[in-house]
Image (cartoon, rainbow, N blue to C red; front, side):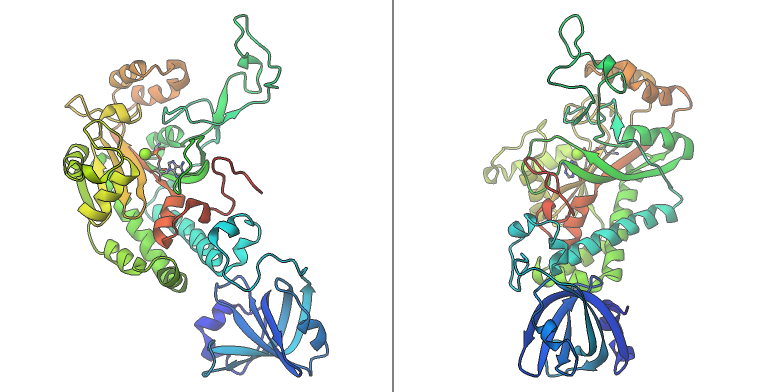
Length: 461
Ligand code: 4AD
Ligand code: MG
């Protein structure tokens, strides 16, 4: 089969030639002796118009087709300079593969994104989601290329684990016990020693801890896999199941970490602009005016850098605009992050050296005793897209911090071992894949960049 994308990109070469295409009907119109059938074939969000005449023997069958039917078409490509679409196919033969019922939900009109979310099994057939999910696929590939070209080893970290990397307690429990009537210990607590793994386990919130073990063996590694968070936040940027990319590099510090993150984001932006120019233009025109200028500016300029302390000072001048007032020690809210990137810096910014109280146990403690060598990358329109840090490589300091936070030493023995056997300075970060796709496409809701989103109150399909 020839694809619609090939025809769009290389129309001269198909001109006057016979082609075969296969796709799904977007609309059918017919008059007495001829008709128009518009289809999309999954190679491109643009559609292809087919003209057919009553000389084909199933003229009536084609004219009666409902939207959504699948067809195979053989015909000749002709240019139509006067028409809305630049070319069309004059059909010699149209074969119906599968008819479509008249109640097909995607009729020929604009459907809202909210409505399309209720039919996530059919929305990939629309222009917008054709573009979104193609860019999502290309971005995943670009990320692998970026790391593989630089000699990073791809590690598959486990999805079921006994640890809570971020220490936020936002985990989905994994159990085979009947929680209506679980076995209990003497003091009445659920007896997890009788559970499948003989202990309490959960879906991973991050692959980092396992990733670090491989970084201490391969020096440069990355993970790219699903992560799960039972965050009870119903926002446009939080999903319960999302994908994260987590590089980890031995002999690297916070500065190296930021350089890597900036290079990765620029590489990915360039890649999609080059490999999916039509899709990116589609987003620019229909979803987010200004997207292309913004992304082109980003690849050609340096990201901003600011310490948390300095960021708070800058933000305090905007306190009258905020619902939550900023003060040193507070976690930055989305409104603050957006103010920093959209009003103060007007580009992506790394915020570094956060107070240790609002960051995870594994971050390297700064000499001031108050802050840690953390870095978050914030971008306009979204806020945080990357969270990372240099890691505490000192055994005693790490153990002391874990004790302060009440972490069970036995759950993290393997992690402490890394500080016992040839510890190194090291750093890494996590890029939220969906937030990255939102940034690249201008789509405003995380539910619209995940094929089958899982968010609070929603686990359909
Ligand atoms: O900042 P976070 O929690 O960092 C970590 O998990 C570290 N272990 C990463 C590391 O250093 N290896 O999460 C990293 C990123 C965030 O910046 C955000 O982009 C994304 O993951 N993220 C989410 N994306 C969608 N839905 C959620 N609920 C998310 N929570 C975090
Ligand atoms: Mg974070």
